[in-house]
Image (cartoon, rainbow, N blue to C red):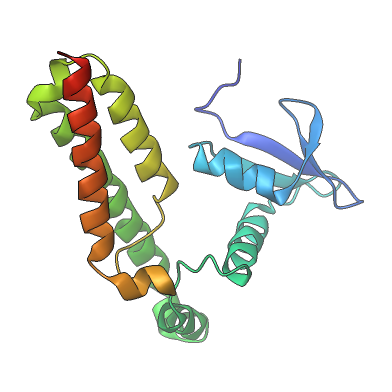
Amino acid sequence: MADNAKPLLIKRYASRRLYNTETSDYVTLEDIALFIREGREVKIVDLKSGDDLTRQYLLQIIAEHESRGESVLPVDVLTDLVRSYTSQASSVVPQFLAASFEMLREGQSQMLETMTRANPMAQMPGFEAMRAQQEAWLKAVGGMVPGASSGPAAEKGGEDLTDIKRQLAELQEKLSKMGQ
């Protein structure tokens, strides 16, 4: 069984192939992205030199998603990031970004906890399955910040929240019918 507290070690061979040391097989960038989405920490090292390549590969994963139109980072944020590399702001930006994402994670955790604790439906059969689905959904959109995306979803604005509320109400109604 894998130890999820310990980072998953991925070794990069001279051929640039990536090797999962836990499962003893080769993996792709998409596999690594999936491990991360599932909550797993990864560490990618060069087999020959031992250099840590994690940052390089994470940036490559982000660049590939962005190039496929899965935009999470608005152009003005990307522009500010580029500027931060050439200014004195580079010393503050990493801490600011880390704190911002930590606040986002904490907010999601608190929302899930509140939904479970304050909801009288928590005692109904099937509620745990619904909560697990919501938790998975929140984990899937974990990196998204409201207003940060572009494209058709961003143009809708508050309609997304309305759709989510409607879907949640439909799920709650189905669960209440199951409990009768």
